Amino acid sequence: MRLEVSTVVVARLFRLAAGVIVAIVTSRFLGPAGRGEYFIVVTLAAVIAQFGNLGLHSSNTYYAARDPKLVPSIIGNTVWVSLLSGGGLAAGVLAAAYLFDVFGGGATRSLWFVLFLAPLGLLFLLGENLLLGLGRTILFNTIEILSATLLVVLHLVSIVSFPTSAGFLAARTAGVLLSSAGTLGFLLRISPSRFAFDTSVFRLGFGYAARAYLVALLGYLVLRTNVFLLQFHGGFEEVGLYSVASQVADAMEIIPTSVSLVLFPKLLHQADGGWMMMQRSLIQVAQVMLAACLAVAVASGVLVDVAFGPEFVRSGSMLRLLLPQVFFISLTSIVSQFIAAKGMPLAILGIWIVGLVIAVLLGSVLIPIYGGDGAAAALSLAYAVTFVLVVTLAFGRRDA
Image (cartoon, rainbow, N blue to C red):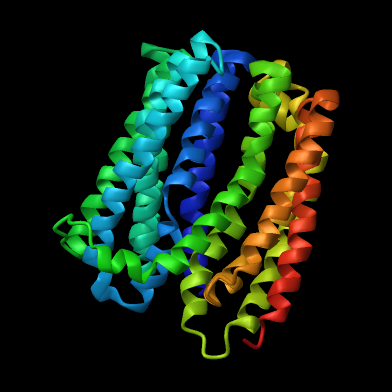
């Protein structure tokens, strides 16, 4: 498992580097307000993908690992869900944004990119999870590296041709289109599909997928709801400052997410339930992430100033306040794989509902007063509570 985790870490490092480069480029050329507009559109597309995945992100991995004969049908279902669910939700959000002028005229025009980013991003996500369920870790890593490299190249090209929010969003859309198409092509070479929607396979995984869907959706809302609260109270400039801190925080999660991706299929095949395997992974991740958070806390001011420029100096304090969130979300992601391998008990939904309520309530109080700093603090507190509750649930299921 260590070798597989190491190779996934290398691939995720490429994605980390790509994300940082894209963040630097867009911040330098757009400034806080333009970067905030770009980040709102990208975040909204990701939220829609979470709403539209119907739990296939987990059930694809779960059933591909347990019964590879289902893969052709899973591929067909994945394509249909991505296009209809992701695309339909994106169209609804766009219509509502125009009807109520939610983000203002200029930003609303940029939202057209959500129509493409949401379904294509969803297809890419589900396709990669399916590869992991099939045990194709090397292919997964290759796609990660290629897609990350492509994203950087297209953003750099946009500097010359169209260095605006719309230009960078067009570059991102082109990158996601090519990445999702490539992933689908590789899947079809492994297991050809007729692209028919298989209702029997969909129903087979519905119970598991529904719980996984709600857990992932609630988790993502905990992570990103404060972005929209921040835009409402502070505007695009405050979101732009916060987005830099958030980008660095997301990048720091490369090790725990890599471990989680490899750990889940392994846990499904553990005769003893995987409790000891999860514990070992948790301790190792905790040690690494504690050291990483301390290092970033010391260097955050210089890091932000050098990489993003003096306009983003306030992002440094936001990043420091986000570091507890980075630590606790890292540990939560490991323990959550153990819970998922146990069949996703309903109690996990209650835990994430509690986390979301805490994040929203704290954000509603702190953001109007402290802006991005309040958003970061609210998120860190919400994840600390969520981690304690998730560990308690896992401990109770260790012998199940």
